[in-house]
Amino acid sequence: MKTKKLPLAFWIFIGLAVGILAGIILIPLEIAGMTGVAFAKSYIKPWGDIFLNLLKFVVVPIVLFSIASGVISMQDIRKVGSVGGKTVIYYMCTTAFAVMLALILASVAKSTGIFSELRTEGLEYTPPEGKSIMSVIVDIFPSNPITPLANATMLQVIVISLFLGFGILLAGEKGLTAARVVDSFNEVFMRIMDLIIKLSPIGVACLICPVVAENGPSILGNLVAVLAVAYVGYIVHAVLVYSTTLGALAGVSPVKFFSNMAPAMMMAFSSASSVGTLPFTLECSEKLGARREVASFVLPLGATINMDGTAIYQGVCAVFIASAFGIDLTLGQMLTIVLTATLASVGTAGVPGAGMVMLTMVLQSVGVPVEGIALVAGIDRVFDMGRTTVNITGDAACAVIVSKMEDKKQARKK
Ligand code: ASP
View 1 (cartoon, rainbow, N blue to C red):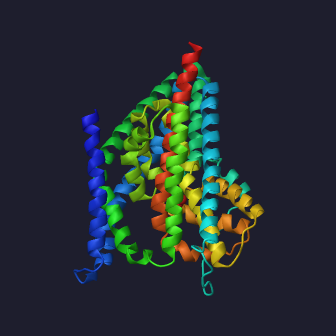
View 2: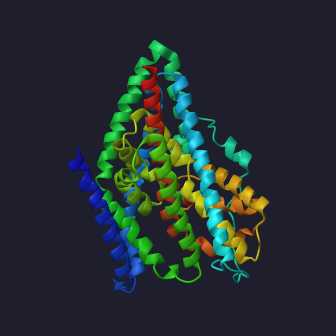
View 3: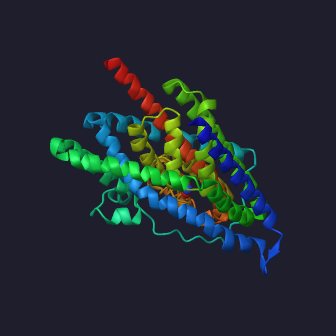
């Protein structure tokens, strides 16, 4: 098993390196009458899009069947409650910690002059329709069972899947056929996912190449500082929070964890989509000892509601944009940011760019002009690659921890 899996991680890494290199080489070139950047966008990006489409195609059935089969194999609604409770507590606490870390780092950057007042006249950013917190909550519940599947509205798919699992458990004898059907489809879609994952080295290369070609030169200037602070936040959070919680609650070493997670992390980095990376996150966390029924419940939920990286990005950008406008945030405003960024990250879809849209809500909550988003919008993808990597790493850490805790609980009962 091991010798079969290792080469894939290696090839994904090669794909990532080749994609980055090709992106850099293409910047100054002219090919077939167009710039290298245009070539990358027109002829390389589509192959990455095909790969991402395939992942998205498989993700709705995977989430639908895997959560339901996770619930069914727990056999007891109380156990689902126990796993769900631990998961939500871990997700919320780590996300709130992530925002606080981001605010501390960004405040240090501000007080040392790394973040400063910038020219803000003429900035324009039209936020897409704003969402209130209540409407985010209402939107979790589907009013019909088909549309959420067709539109891949993940929170609603999760609700459908939970109800499907609960219904089958409550139906007892009569639910057995449905249970077998769910289990069988779960297996079938897992196999389809394996096939798609085999394409990942090529997919990763084609996804990262146009991003590098496009963003290469524009990463310069003032934005280096805000990017650097966000990336320091991502790394400190991942190393500090996941290593300590995994060590203390699951007895898993950070080296083991991060080396096993490498394929999923590289996929997240190049695709900037937690949902698209879900198949990888599932595989890697099972290798780390997460139980199938727990991982298949915790991970799709995490890909949808747990976004520590997004929360860090929102905290850092809120302070950066406020200082660009010469606004000093008070402690009360900082606490508001912790609350809204934690909630905003729950409402953020696990797709590229979603975190920036939700940043609107965070800025509005503390009265910082949303036009400031224009300052960071151009390089959002570079933020997004890092935040998505942290997002899925947090999901996997939770799956491993909750699995080990459930194992211990069961061992105690025996
Ligand atoms: N791209 C992120 C994710 O999929 C969400 C975001 O934009 O922050 O996890």
